[in-house]
Length: 287
Image (tube, rainbow, N blue to C red; front, side):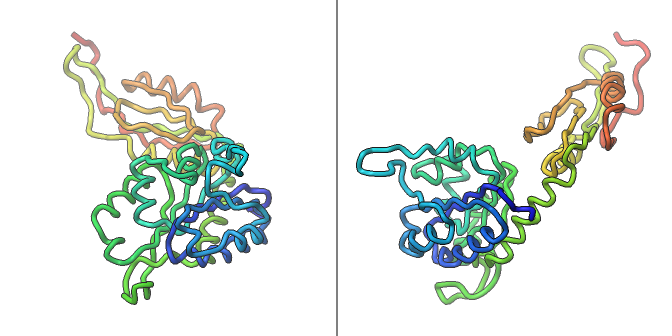
């Protein structure tokens, strides 16, 4: 099973869709995953901790302090334990806090400490979901490399019909299962990718180059790394950068440097993708 012994944190915020999460927990547990549920205080109003603890096999965590004796919940250790964090449902309020880096509760403190992939399943009324602030927050979270599971269309708790329903637990489970399958299909493979432009100096001020940003090559590198590959990214001059820990970036300036770096890493690569926009000409002499 692709989820066997995977450590998954489910973060539940205070939305009506929280009542669906017990089914998601059962599906994950049946697949062999270890599940730890973290709830915001507001989430307690929609689904009971007893139900979630019984299904997950672990105590539910909400606060930084475990008991009256002041025993501390180690949010950093918990964040490092996780192979995946799935936030479902995510209210507009929690979404905004995640996008702006606030950590005013235990769930958000774990999120801010996590190094694992993050999935987010929003759930809110249609006007909140369509609000420009919500759209902007989703864009920000996507720019962090997080996987958004879009809200679906249907009847909402308000009685209105439209987009804002959290995706069904079965589909969320499929997204998680697919993620872990994709994550391992390039495991132990070495992928070499060239990306970005090259700048060929004419003199200390001018150069021959192009407008390539390297965005496509970086995206390919991120995708390969997400699927378990060890990636060497040879990147020309650009302000963009790859963020995945499995990517080693080699910065180069001109075509000669890119050729040298490619020849250095090519013999040990299993897959090579030449996505760089190398300049067409190199001056023979520079001023």
